[in-house]
Amino acid sequence: MFADEDLKTQLQRVLASVEQLLPKAIDKIDWSKSWAANWRSYSFAGHLEAINELDPVTLDDLLGIDKQKQILEDNTRQFVQGFPSNNVLLWGTRGTGKSTLVRALLNVYARKGLRVIQVDKEDLLNLADIFAAIKGEPYRFILLCDDLSFEPGESSYKVLKSALDGAVYAAPEHVRFYATSNRRHLLPEYETDNLGFKMVNNELHAGEAVEEKTSLADRFGLWVPFHLFSQNQYFELVGQLVTKHCLEHQLVPLLDEELYTAALKWAHDKSKRCGRTALQFSRYWVGQQLLKKE
Image (cartoon, rainbow, N blue to C red; front, side, top):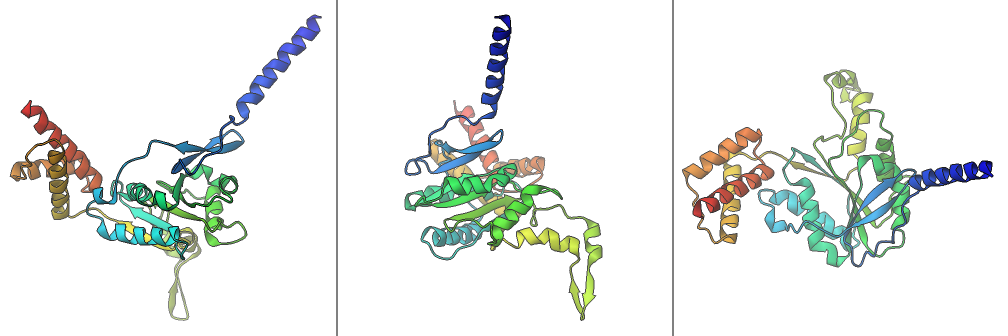
């Protein structure tokens, strides 16, 4: 009798452990109601989890990156309408609006069939499962890989490379990859990489190390660079954002020397002049003015 009780207790512990490894039961996403999702890995499996609270940002909210907006919006319109389009690498300094631009495009084109799935670098190994989960859906999916970079030897690097290359393990026609990164080639670059260059028939050819590091980025049809602003561009953006926030709170905007001196100090403290820095300063400055007004 005691042996049976011990066996029963052991089986219950085993079942409880197994349940923790199994994916939770989750309803299939209704893409007619959900515009975006995350891939959530769970032990040996994973699932798509709907994102119901979206950033309401619009294209008009993104200032100082008009050229980048035009390039990415044109490509996205082509994709949504079923025309030839490219995978896109948005690279450059942090805080310049790369991922925010993708979210803004979703708000514009979701009603025309665009959907976004955010995939972390570690979950690129599950691309086959993600493709299977959206197979047959009548929507156009952007797989957003945010803040993407690799270290040498990471296995997810080769999975993405195969999916982009149109090989056997290719992405479906209704899927495009949009990746944001601080690295143009997605891999760290070292001074020693340049030692492999050699002359062939009077032409300079890159060595194997450089070829390997550029091979993934080359598979993105569009490279869209994002750079730091000049001081004049930064001041212009600060003025626009401060004016916008002031008008939202019935406050008369005063764009004077005191404002721009404070904005420049803020940028120096942050060590960069970019859209994020200007937005953060404008919130601080207008908030301070509102407190003084009370």
